[in-house]
Amino acid sequence: MNETDLILNCMSADTPKKKSQRTTKQIRHKSLQEWTGADFLKHINTQLSYYGLSLESTGARDSDIINRIYDNLVDRTDFRMSNMVLRDYLDWWIGSQAFKYRESGDSIYIHSFMKDYHLNKFVKEWKLKHSPVAEDDNYQP
Image (cartoon, rainbow, N blue to C red; front, side, top):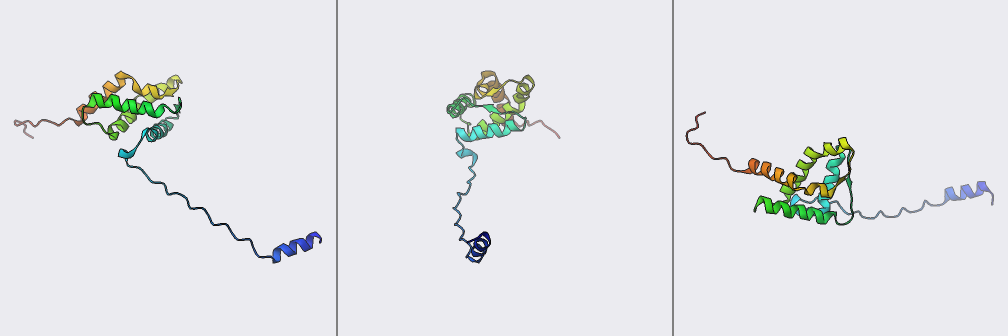
């Protein structure tokens, strides 16, 4: 059998059947209340990427540090703590501190988010923003 016969033989044969594609798991978007430490780490990396920065990972314990940040915020914000407050804190920190790391060229570690003065400053601003406003009876528009 020469090459021409081989080619003609292959052309006359039936085409091979395609393999059925595997079913892919649908990506389920979690609500903010279902987020875990790993989800918050992904959020931090996404937000830092907008500044051209990335979070230096210290290993599997990064999720534990997110949980410690959550616990520190619980102590400072009384009973109103939720995942939304934690995400607000992370966004606030990235918006107010990330440029300093970019200018200095320092690496950002998850421990950078745990500094007490950052937590206290955020909680002070957050409480002012979310505290009820007292009505003034003598107010005239």
